[in-house]
Length: 257
Image (spheres, rainbow, N blue to C red):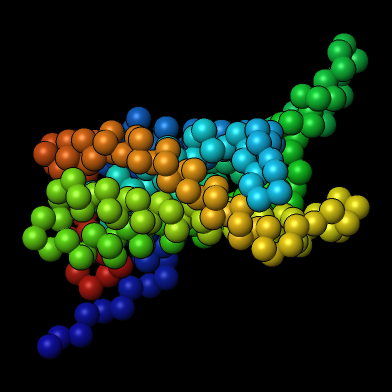
Protein backbone atom coordinates (compact mmCIF):
# COMPACT_ATOMS: atom_id res chain seq x y z
CA UNK A 1 0.00 0.00 0.00
CA UNK A 2 1.52 3.32 -1.09
CA UNK A 3 1.32 6.39 1.05
CA UNK A 4 -0.34 9.30 -0.68
CA UNK A 5 1.26 12.73 -0.22
CA UNK A 6 -0.41 14.97 2.31
CA UNK A 7 -2.23 17.98 0.96
CA UNK A 8 -1.22 21.39 2.26
CA UNK A 9 -3.78 23.48 4.12
CA UNK A 10 -4.06 25.94 1.25
CA UNK A 11 -4.67 23.13 -1.21
CA UNK A 12 -7.36 21.65 1.00
CA UNK A 13 -9.04 25.04 1.25
CA UNK A 14 -8.93 25.43 -2.53
CA UNK A 15 -10.46 21.96 -2.94
CA UNK A 16 -13.27 22.79 -0.53
CA UNK A 17 -13.98 26.07 -2.29
CA UNK A 18 -14.03 24.33 -5.65
CA UNK A 19 -16.36 21.62 -4.32
CA UNK A 20 -18.71 24.30 -3.02
CA UNK A 21 -18.57 26.26 -6.27
CA UNK A 22 -19.27 23.13 -8.32
CA UNK A 23 -22.11 22.18 -6.01
CA UNK A 24 -23.85 25.56 -6.23
CA UNK A 25 -23.49 25.35 -10.00
CA UNK A 26 -24.71 21.74 -10.07
CA UNK A 27 -27.87 22.23 -8.02
CA UNK A 28 -30.53 23.68 -10.35
CA UNK A 29 -30.63 27.44 -9.75
CA UNK A 30 -34.39 27.59 -8.98
CA UNK A 31 -33.85 25.15 -6.09
CA UNK A 32 -30.99 27.19 -4.62
CA UNK A 33 -32.88 30.46 -5.11
CA UNK A 34 -36.06 29.19 -3.48
CA UNK A 35 -34.09 27.72 -0.58
CA UNK A 36 -32.18 30.93 0.11
CA UNK A 37 -35.34 33.04 -0.23
CA UNK A 38 -37.19 30.73 2.17
CA UNK A 39 -34.45 31.11 4.80
CA UNK A 40 -34.48 34.92 4.47
CA UNK A 41 -38.28 35.04 4.47
CA UNK A 42 -38.50 32.86 7.59
CA UNK A 43 -36.30 35.37 9.38
CA UNK A 44 -38.64 38.23 8.44
CA UNK A 45 -41.94 36.44 9.03
CA UNK A 46 -40.77 35.17 12.42
CA UNK A 47 -41.28 38.74 13.70
CA UNK A 48 -45.04 38.21 13.63
CA UNK A 49 -46.83 35.76 15.91
CA UNK A 50 -49.96 34.49 14.17
CA UNK A 51 -51.22 32.28 17.01
CA UNK A 52 -50.34 31.88 20.66
CA UNK A 53 -51.77 30.20 23.73
CA UNK A 54 -50.38 28.51 26.82
CA UNK A 55 -49.01 25.52 24.93
CA UNK A 56 -48.30 26.74 21.41
CA UNK A 57 -46.81 29.75 19.68
CA UNK A 58 -46.73 29.99 15.89
CA UNK A 59 -45.02 32.71 13.93
CA UNK A 60 -45.37 33.55 10.26
CA UNK A 61 -42.25 31.56 9.41
CA UNK A 62 -44.28 28.36 9.42
CA UNK A 63 -45.68 29.35 6.03
CA UNK A 64 -42.27 28.86 4.36
CA UNK A 65 -40.30 26.62 6.74
CA UNK A 66 -41.53 23.53 4.90
CA UNK A 67 -39.83 24.81 1.74
CA UNK A 68 -36.46 25.06 3.48
CA UNK A 69 -36.63 21.52 4.84
CA UNK A 70 -38.07 20.03 1.67
CA UNK A 71 -35.26 21.64 -0.31
CA UNK A 72 -32.67 20.14 2.02
CA UNK A 73 -34.36 16.73 1.73
CA UNK A 74 -34.21 16.77 -2.06
CA UNK A 75 -30.58 17.93 -2.12
CA UNK A 76 -29.61 15.34 0.51
CA UNK A 77 -31.26 12.59 -1.52
CA UNK A 78 -29.41 13.48 -4.71
CA UNK A 79 -26.13 15.05 -3.59
CA UNK A 80 -25.67 13.78 -0.02
CA UNK A 81 -25.87 15.33 3.46
CA UNK A 82 -22.60 17.25 3.25
CA UNK A 83 -23.72 18.93 0.05
CA UNK A 84 -27.03 19.92 1.64
CA UNK A 85 -25.15 21.32 4.62
CA UNK A 86 -22.93 23.38 2.31
CA UNK A 87 -26.06 24.81 0.73
CA UNK A 88 -27.42 25.59 4.21
CA UNK A 89 -24.23 27.44 5.18
CA UNK A 90 -24.47 29.46 1.97
CA UNK A 91 -28.08 30.38 2.78
CA UNK A 92 -27.16 31.38 6.34
CA UNK A 93 -24.38 33.67 5.07
CA UNK A 94 -26.72 35.30 2.55
CA UNK A 95 -29.32 35.74 5.29
CA UNK A 96 -26.79 37.40 7.60
CA UNK A 97 -25.71 39.73 4.79
CA UNK A 98 -29.35 40.59 4.11
CA UNK A 99 -29.98 41.29 7.79
CA UNK A 100 -26.92 43.57 7.87
CA UNK A 101 -28.25 45.53 4.90
CA UNK A 102 -31.70 45.71 6.51
CA UNK A 103 -30.16 47.00 9.74
CA UNK A 104 -28.16 49.68 7.95
CA UNK A 105 -31.29 50.84 6.14
CA UNK A 106 -33.25 50.88 9.41
CA UNK A 107 -30.82 53.26 11.13
CA UNK A 108 -30.53 55.71 8.24
CA UNK A 109 -32.50 58.81 9.36
CA UNK A 110 -35.08 60.37 7.07
CA UNK A 111 -37.07 63.56 7.67
CA UNK A 112 -39.89 62.77 5.30
CA UNK A 113 -42.07 60.17 7.00
CA UNK A 114 -42.33 58.18 10.20
CA UNK A 115 -40.71 54.84 9.35
CA UNK A 116 -40.46 53.59 12.92
CA UNK A 117 -42.66 50.55 12.29
CA UNK A 118 -40.76 49.70 9.12
CA UNK A 119 -37.40 50.17 10.86
CA UNK A 120 -38.48 47.92 13.75
CA UNK A 121 -39.43 45.10 11.41
CA UNK A 122 -36.40 45.11 9.13
CA UNK A 123 -33.95 46.19 11.83
CA UNK A 124 -34.70 43.12 13.88
CA UNK A 125 -33.31 42.16 17.28
CA UNK A 126 -29.73 40.93 17.43
CA UNK A 127 -30.29 38.08 19.88
CA UNK A 128 -33.29 36.78 17.92
CA UNK A 129 -31.13 36.73 14.79
CA UNK A 130 -28.35 34.97 16.69
CA UNK A 131 -30.77 32.41 18.16
CA UNK A 132 -32.46 31.71 14.83
CA UNK A 133 -29.13 31.35 13.02
CA UNK A 134 -27.76 28.86 15.54
CA UNK A 135 -31.07 26.98 15.63
CA UNK A 136 -31.34 26.73 11.84
CA UNK A 137 -27.76 25.56 11.36
CA UNK A 138 -28.10 22.87 14.05
CA UNK A 139 -31.45 21.72 12.66
CA UNK A 140 -29.98 21.58 9.14
CA UNK A 141 -27.25 19.22 10.35
CA UNK A 142 -29.80 17.07 12.15
CA UNK A 143 -32.17 17.01 9.17
CA UNK A 144 -29.54 16.30 6.53
CA UNK A 145 -27.64 13.53 8.27
CA UNK A 146 -30.71 11.82 9.77
CA UNK A 147 -32.33 11.90 6.31
CA UNK A 148 -29.26 10.25 4.82
CA UNK A 149 -29.03 7.64 7.61
CA UNK A 150 -32.70 6.68 7.29
CA UNK A 151 -32.26 6.30 3.54
CA UNK A 152 -29.63 3.62 4.15
CA UNK A 153 -32.33 1.39 5.65
CA UNK A 154 -34.11 1.07 2.30
CA UNK A 155 -31.64 -1.20 0.53
CA UNK A 156 -34.11 -2.90 -1.82
CA UNK A 157 -35.70 0.21 -3.25
CA UNK A 158 -33.78 3.30 -2.01
CA UNK A 159 -35.21 5.53 -4.74
CA UNK A 160 -38.86 4.60 -4.21
CA UNK A 161 -41.63 6.83 -2.94
CA UNK A 162 -41.80 5.06 0.44
CA UNK A 163 -38.10 5.59 1.03
CA UNK A 164 -38.31 9.28 0.13
CA UNK A 165 -41.32 10.12 2.29
CA UNK A 166 -40.06 8.08 5.26
CA UNK A 167 -36.67 9.74 5.36
CA UNK A 168 -38.23 13.13 4.61
CA UNK A 169 -40.98 12.97 7.26
CA UNK A 170 -38.81 11.64 10.09
CA UNK A 171 -35.86 13.93 9.44
CA UNK A 172 -38.14 16.95 9.02
CA UNK A 173 -39.91 16.32 12.32
CA UNK A 174 -36.69 16.01 14.30
CA UNK A 175 -35.04 18.85 12.42
CA UNK A 176 -38.00 21.17 13.00
CA UNK A 177 -38.30 20.10 16.63
CA UNK A 178 -34.69 20.96 17.44
CA UNK A 179 -34.93 24.16 15.38
CA UNK A 180 -37.88 25.26 17.50
CA UNK A 181 -36.38 24.05 20.76
CA UNK A 182 -32.95 25.63 20.33
CA UNK A 183 -34.49 28.92 19.22
CA UNK A 184 -36.99 28.96 22.10
CA UNK A 185 -34.41 28.10 24.75
CA UNK A 186 -31.87 30.66 23.55
CA UNK A 187 -34.43 33.42 23.02
CA UNK A 188 -36.83 32.92 25.92
CA UNK A 189 -34.62 31.25 28.55
CA UNK A 190 -31.26 32.95 27.93
CA UNK A 191 -31.70 36.36 26.28
CA UNK A 192 -35.29 37.46 27.00
CA UNK A 193 -34.92 37.45 30.82
CA UNK A 194 -31.99 39.86 30.39
CA UNK A 195 -33.17 42.17 27.62
CA UNK A 196 -36.97 41.93 27.90
CA UNK A 197 -37.48 42.94 31.53
CA UNK A 198 -37.44 39.43 32.96
CA UNK A 199 -39.88 37.88 30.47
CA UNK A 200 -39.10 34.17 30.05
CA UNK A 201 -40.42 30.72 29.22
CA UNK A 202 -40.00 27.55 31.24
CA UNK A 203 -38.25 24.54 29.75
CA UNK A 204 -41.57 22.68 29.64
CA UNK A 205 -43.11 25.51 27.61
CA UNK A 206 -40.19 25.42 25.19
CA UNK A 207 -40.49 21.65 24.70
CA UNK A 208 -44.28 21.71 24.36
CA UNK A 209 -44.25 24.49 21.78
CA UNK A 210 -41.41 22.79 19.93
CA UNK A 211 -43.28 19.49 19.63
CA UNK A 212 -46.58 21.05 18.55
CA UNK A 213 -44.81 23.40 16.16
CA UNK A 214 -42.85 20.51 14.63
CA UNK A 215 -46.08 18.55 14.10
CA UNK A 216 -47.67 21.48 12.28
CA UNK A 217 -44.56 21.98 10.16
CA UNK A 218 -44.51 18.25 9.42
CA UNK A 219 -48.07 18.54 8.15
CA UNK A 220 -46.92 21.17 5.66
CA UNK A 221 -44.09 18.87 4.59
CA UNK A 222 -46.54 16.00 4.04
CA UNK A 223 -48.71 18.20 1.83
CA UNK A 224 -45.86 19.33 -0.39
CA UNK A 225 -43.56 16.25 -0.31
CA UNK A 226 -44.95 14.82 -3.61
CA UNK A 227 -43.36 17.81 -5.34
CA UNK A 228 -40.02 16.98 -3.72
CA UNK A 229 -40.27 13.32 -4.73
CA UNK A 230 -40.99 14.14 -8.38
CA UNK A 231 -38.16 16.66 -8.39
CA UNK A 232 -35.75 14.11 -6.94
CA UNK A 233 -36.71 11.56 -9.60
CA UNK A 234 -36.26 14.17 -12.32
CA UNK A 235 -32.76 15.05 -11.11
CA UNK A 236 -31.76 11.39 -11.08
CA UNK A 237 -33.21 10.79 -14.54
CA UNK A 238 -31.41 13.80 -16.04
CA UNK A 239 -28.10 13.08 -14.29
CA UNK A 240 -28.08 16.46 -12.58
CA UNK A 241 -24.70 17.41 -11.09
CA UNK A 242 -22.51 15.14 -13.21
CA UNK A 243 -19.55 17.55 -13.16
CA UNK A 244 -19.76 17.78 -9.37
CA UNK A 245 -19.78 14.02 -8.89
CA UNK A 246 -16.95 13.55 -11.39
CA UNK A 247 -14.78 16.00 -9.48
CA UNK A 248 -15.43 14.19 -6.20
CA UNK A 249 -14.42 10.92 -7.88
CA UNK A 250 -11.21 12.53 -9.09
CA UNK A 251 -10.11 13.30 -5.54
CA UNK A 252 -8.10 10.27 -4.52
CA UNK A 253 -7.69 10.13 -0.79
CA UNK A 254 -8.55 13.82 -0.46
CA UNK A 255 -11.62 15.39 1.00
CA UNK A 256 -14.26 13.94 -1.30
CA UNK A 257 -17.66 13.62 0.29
